[in-house]
Length: 257
Image (cartoon, rainbow, N blue to C red; front, side, top):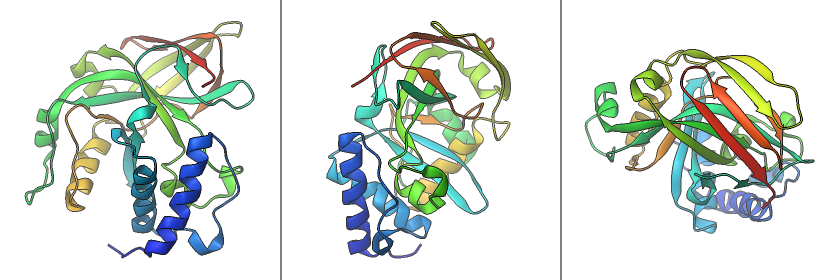
């Protein structure tokens, strides 16, 4: 682990927290406070949470690729359980990613002993259909390097937790068809596939990653582990139904906050 510069972390967190409060986006962080490594970016995540007095309600994660750490807390106030769901939209559209969420029934606290997959399996209490709500705090996210996205929570705006589904089916859900029906628009069909094949692999990684950093996961937290298709937009203010193959169906309406 590196030791982040506290002044850099504080300056970056002030900017990103203000944008979260206002639901706005802006240019890249000033050069003097741009995180360039994962440890600094993760420290900015924590500082944003502290400024907003936010608790962690869920996590998003993915297995590391190309040396990139893929882990971000989802603010508890941005975890939604009922429709309509009030989120900031862009031009009347909301960007989403269909995922599965694994909900913990037991804590996975910091400890000396590493977490084996069986330990994590034993802590999972259920699974739900879910939508990650995507929105960057940067005007032009395509031009922003990964550490700055990591500092900003990896484009996470929130998480909608849909109906509970069969846990055994969720554990084995490597792929399934996804159908999206939005009021007033044509039905869209997609072939969904988990980026790791096994949707539990990122959760196993996250539990051990947090343990090594002296942190843990708590009972009641939901963990999403990767989108089954690339993110796409749906209209705000209309009824939307997503069918996750044989796993179940999620209905949602997004309204402006």
